[in-house]
Image (cartoon, rainbow, N blue to C red; front, side, top):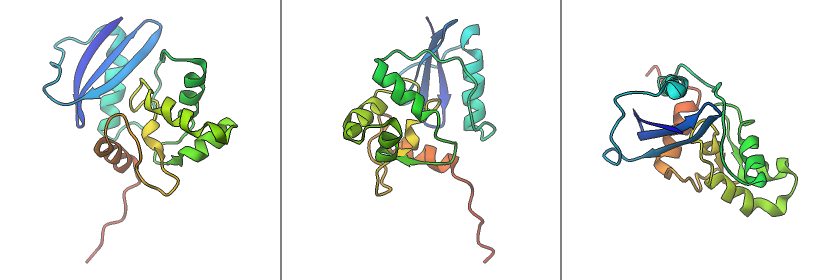
Length: 158
């Protein structure tokens, strides 16, 4: 496994992966980890695509992913990939789509264990009432990501 640390508008981003795919993308506060001087070849595309996302030039990712988790977690994470850029769904919506509304807590827990920050967009899942509930990266980051992805509103002419 190779690891790289890059800067992003939301902190230091850690990417871990190998020829089998990217297994971890996470964020931490500046000063937590030192930015890498060299990007391993196997991680260069992930770095490029994340930078394009933050620059507003990319709305979806084309990366080979290899997250580690239970069969249920994998199913939940795969469902996250179906949420379009700029859109949100509630935890209940996601749970209904997975077929068992009684599993809402388990779905929320699996979202919280998503190892692929941004690329598997758990930040697009919100509370039924529209609130920004639960986010492993912190609610301020979730808010930033949703604002980054929202279509820009027309500015007032006055």
